[in-house]
Length: 547
Image 1 (cartoon, rainbow, N blue to C red):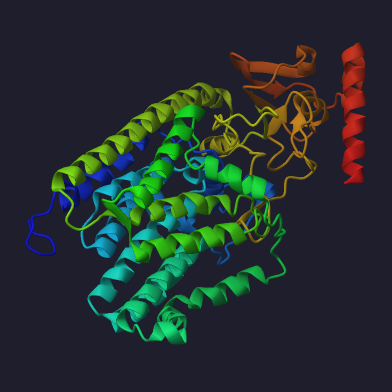
Image 2: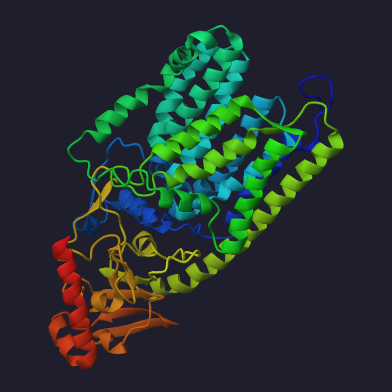
C-alpha cells in the first residue's frame, strides 16, 4: 500500500490500523449493560418519558415534555428509530459506544489530512476518547464533538482536493446537523475550520499576510457554517429559556479542569496520564527530531483562547468551559510530527510507545467500567421489588470532599424511570435547556435534581441536604416508596414509618407505611438527636432565606 510519495505506508498509517484503533476505542463499553457515565442514567429516564409520554397516563401528571428545536438533541432523536428495533437500553449503549469510536477515527483522519500521513506522535492523542466530559455523561456533547472532528477532516479533504464549491454546499446541512446534536460540536467545527482556512489563505496568497486580508477571506469561506447561528439566536432569545450565564475567568476552576482531563477512578494514574502527554508536548519543543504543524498549532491556540474566554456557566449549564479542555489538548498533540528525514526506526519506536500508552489507558478504563457495572448491578437489584408506576423518591449518598472517584450512582433514579416508569426525582428541570420539566404536585424541593443527593452534613456552596433532613422533610403524602443508595451513616430511627422491602449493605428500598405521620412528631421522638437536627435545619433555613 502506497501513501503520498513513493515510500510505503508504515503500520500505523494504514486504514487497517485506523479500523483497529476504532475497535479498541469501543472495548471499555462492550461489557456494561448501561454505560457507567455519571449523567447518562438521568438522560435515559428522559428518553423513556419522551417515548412513552402519550401512552402512560401518569407520566403526564409528573412531567411536562415539549418538543423544541434546541441545540442539544443528539441521542434524543437517534433513539426514535432505534428503540423499536432493539430496545431503549441497547440503543443508548450502541450510540454511546459509537462516540469514542468516532472520536478516534476523527483524530486520526485529521492527522492524515494535515500531515499527509498519520505521524507516529498522533497516537498519543487517542486517550482523549475517554476524557472527563465523556465520563461525566455529557453524551450529546461528546457525540457532537466526535462528529465535528470527522467533519473537520472532511472539510480539510475537500480543500486539499480543490472542491471548495462542493464544500460550501455540503457544510450547510452538516453544520445544521451538528448544531442540533449539540451546539458545542458546531462551535468546535467553526473554530477549527476558520483556523484551517486562515493557514490555507496564508499559504496560497503570501502577499495577503501584509494586508491582513487572510482572516477576511477565511471568514468568507466559513459562511456555510453560519446558518445555525440564526437557530441559536432564536433558541436562546426565547422567553421560555431559563438559566444564567456567569462565573467568568474563574482561574482556579479552569486550572482544576485541566488537571481533570482524564479523571476517572485512580487519581495518581489519571494525573500521570496527563503529565505524560504534557511531556510529549514539551518534547516537541525541545527534540530536534520533532516539530509542530503550523496548521494544528494555530487551531490548538484558538481552542485555548476559547477555553479561557468561556464562563463556567452558560445559560444555567455548568462546566461549559471544562468540556473544551480535552479537545484543545488533543489537537495540540495532533500538531506534533517527526521532522522530514528522521530515521524510520525512531518513528516506529515513537508509534509503538504511543500505541502502548493508549492500550494501557484503554485497559484501565475497561477495568474501571467493569467495577462500575458491578456497582450498578448491585444497586439496581432493588428495582425487582419496585412496582410499575411507583411514586419513588431516591436519596443517594455523597460527601462534601469531592473525591476524585465519582460513584456514577448520582442519577440512578433515571433507571427506575426508564425500567419501571417510576417517578425519578433526579431529572433536570430547566425550561429551554431540556425537553423535560417536572410537574409533580406537592413535592416542591423534592421533585428534581439535586434533591436526590444527600450528605452527612450540609456542604458549603451546594444545594445538597443532609440525609437526616431529607428523611424527615420529604413529603410522605406524595411518595409511596423510598430508595436509599449508599447513604452516609444515619440514625435508624429516621426510618420510622418506612417498611423495608429490600436491603443490600447500606442501601435499601422502603415502602412508606404511614403517609400521615407528621415529620415534627418524628423529630420529637428522636430526643437529643432530634433537637440537634432541628438546630441544623433552622440554620439551613436561615441561610436559604438570606440567599
